Length: 197
Ligand code: GRF
Image 1 (tube, helix red, strand yellow):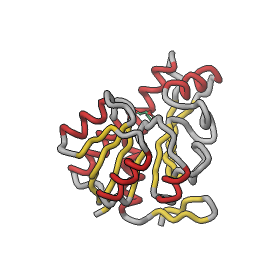
Image 2: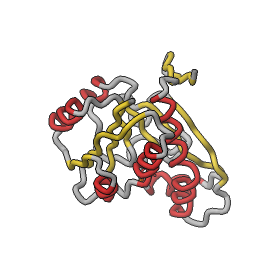
Image 3: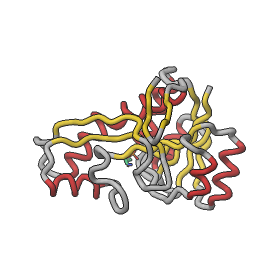
């Protein structure tokens, strides 16, 4: 079983999707720890509701200590809005997964987080957007891409419409699929590209 830590900063619906998938035995892993940089993050409540250790931590050394204490094999960033340091990334090479609510390389990088991603997509007038799950590297949203899925957003009238359509139709299932592939050891990274074996 893979020991999983999930980092959240907000509502935690992606965390909930992983919790539910683990409980349905759809993931060969167990969430041992949920960390947030925001003590009011509802994601912490979601963890507590499922008897998962939930901690508000900002100090990197304390975060690393907690990860080692729980023998974490995989870190999932699910709407985590704090910076992940080079030190942490180097401690967990290709063992940190992030979900980004666009089709990278569109609408990603510095400043593209949360609703800002969808505001940019709406402003550009793209007819298709989606989500990307990728390994975390020292380049923001620049790590090897694991999975992507697109969806028609031509019927969306606001950035919020886009956000909800992608979150509810794409993100939750894509992240669960990526976590399961990792837990089954089916992700090979070769020359910054991910091969699913
Ligand atoms: C999601 O849209 C995710 O793609 C982005 O932040 C949001 C988190 O939503 N990184 P939730 O907290 O999982 O509901």
